Image 1 (cartoon, one colour):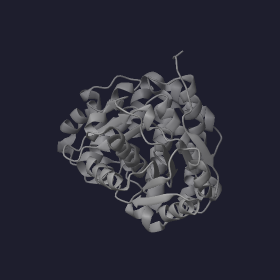
Image 2: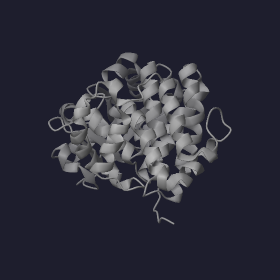
Image 3: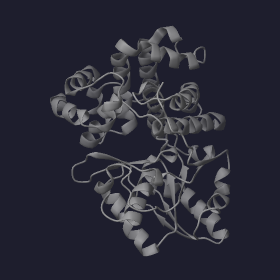
Length: 383
């Protein structure tokens, strides 16, 4: 039995129309100046402006920074810090996908503690108290709203840095599923696969605890039974809400366990080829499940018990093989590639990518030991 120390640091506000509660969610926090961090696509849809309007009606002064990138880099963070130093915020709001929320955390690290993003690559490296933050996710993917980690890529080396500190946790997260109705089909697909991968990898992580498994199982139940629904009926608000909650529970599972080899394999694909993260992990995950299943088949069977008899989910007796086939089917159903060869990846790059994957932080938490050799074999299988 794995020891744990669990404390829920983020207030969770869920339901259609809950964005309207943003002023009351911020009210307990100190300060009247609010910087909203988002990306150009979300800004164009208009949600940051709605949030800013609600806050201004309540007497807050607001500024919007829409320079977060799809895969946030140190350059995006630094640009946000420039805006923050001019505006002097007292509260930050990350509104958008995981990139906006991670960018908000990155800006907070540097604005509150100084230095560069690279100084916070690791765990518990903040040197001062950080500004309070609110998260408003508009996708159902990363679960960043429930985590104390920011994933920021070094703009020069393209290495993804996991920067974590409990002081970087959001004070509150507003999950308004109506905000996810405007997602493009591709965003729904890749974020949904990403969330599913979090449920699967956290359930078998070396650091899994009884607490993390609770969140992994509930996340899998919600995501596995609703992903196909949001693909087929994008305006199904109930299914959208289930996906958003499932992604949040998976984020809590990550916070209380960790991910595994599928994410280690996915990160070099994103860094080298700009492969969308959900696409990269969607290709990698079935192969990792089969690999781990050679020793941990029972764990995958346990997870399938949660969804057994629910839609197309395989029976628990199918184990790792059945789960891997089910995941591949979902990736196909989402209109995504299932092989690296379909993504313009050069097979000659496999040895170097395997070296990079072996250096990824999540590799060490995979239940079955992976070295450069095993990761290279997994890449080759993925072609």
